[in-house]
Length: 125
Image 1 (cartoon, rainbow, N blue to C red):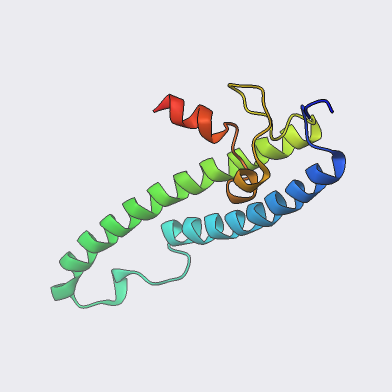
Image 2: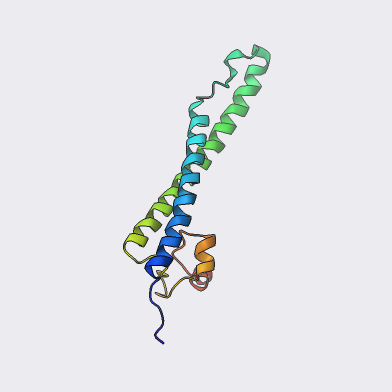
């Protein structure tokens, strides 16, 4: 029997469902981070007494920096998931970009935006 060089359409649909679910959650998480950065929840230091204001501003700045980094990571994750959807449409999803072999299903279920097999990933390090 010849070795498979791509996943079947039904297998691609299974992966697409996984990716769409993760993408929906990632978008919700990103919106939460974005709203915390823009302070849309109304929780700020404007209503605190002046004594605590200096301490609050420092903590708020650190918190916003961390939220900004998390938002950037989340956006990168969303972009990777969207790229995976494009690979599904092109029927190139699940093919290692280094070796050209199929990435095991277990890896794709755990990391649906993976473009490298475990072996190829280990060789990069």
